[in-house]
Image (cartoon, rainbow, N blue to C red):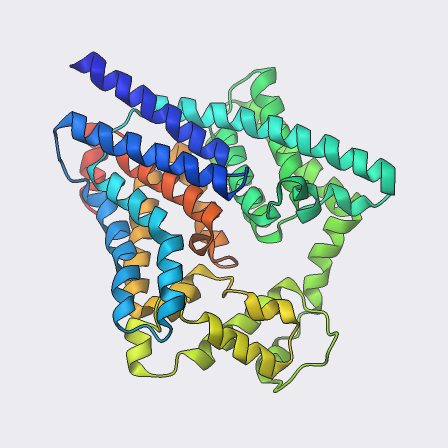
Length: 408
């Protein structure tokens, strides 16, 4: 019986790794892989014949069930139905997480290590393709941001989310050896060229914390600190596109964004201004007590966002944006009820990952990114966060860990 359990356990990590690998490769491939992962997970749960509830996964399940319930008060039923279709994987992740048998921390670590190597392979391929395009067209931006990952039609921010999580995982578990140092260095370089401001800034701060408080070897501590600082300074000084992305934020006009009744056509917006505009939009959409408590319904804010942006005369692309802030997105569409459940999901994630500290950096990056992106309203965000969340919730606890987690 033990051998059968171990066999299913190993197979589960195999399909989980396959799901991680599929995330950058298009919606069809990742959707197909997710179906395989879900079927395998449910079969394993049934084979175990032990339906022990994992209470730590219940808040995510309740949060995802609220998507369906919001149909009752949705201000745009068709949009909510469409949104439910998109959010179904998060519900399935939560359902699996509630019944999933405990998983091995050691095998989880091994899976993460393998994926870190695969990310390096992906990075090398993308860099080579970008260099070839640069040599042909002499356009330096091919090496940065969305252009760097455009061969796979990827968004640089979501790729940065994954790269940052695994760079910090490798740094947090760093061992002496050329292989580990090479992987860590390459992932950080890849992250710098992806040029996502929020993630890069949070990653640098988190990595400095890891270097000073987690790495014991004085040699590795000094070397890691030197690599992070030198690469960061070199990028900011010598890499013009990255430098421009940071310096442009100083042109943000807070008063104008919140007060202007209309904006001039052709006006250039900083990344921060675009997100501040969405806060203004939120304040215009949610203005009744019922809406504050229950929200307007999943995805029911889309048409209102479009109407408000047309009135403000902002660029057409803004009309199709979501809130670019997970917290505001939840508060607008699912109200205070949804926001409280979502906060509980994150609090449990913080407490669990703080004990299993090798995944704690993932939690830090996730919480920071939620301020600038509606991660869970995008398929790649759902796949990456959903899988990582239920894996972390299902790690087999030692006695001390159980005592700590039981206090949640």
